[in-house]
Length: 146
Image (tube, rainbow, N blue to C red; front, side, top):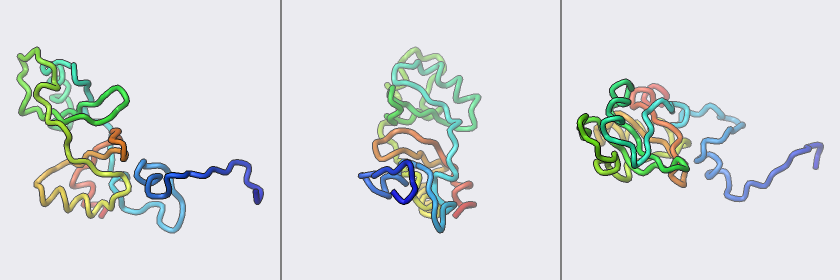
């Protein structure tokens, strides 16, 4: 087909492609979007991980929380350090905040920063449309991009 050896028909469409943080080309491939500010160095844990252990990991992290993921990396909840007792032997899921607010990687950085400012939050959690974790973006990095 016109000299192309590999041609694909991505049925879900362009927005779905962008929402998964997949590579793009075109007039504005470097647009200021949340995905460009994402980092993946946040503490990740499973629902059954023990609170004390998760808190130890958070204390060595630049973030004041851990994210609770399923085996397929679906975001289940957020575990803030302030809610974790270092002496606890309970599973982190017992104290995690289920269903935190998330953003898609193709959302404009300025828009995400605005939401964070309005809600007095410092971090945006970025996921795919299916809820699989991609990364976190700081409000400062988003403001700088936007």
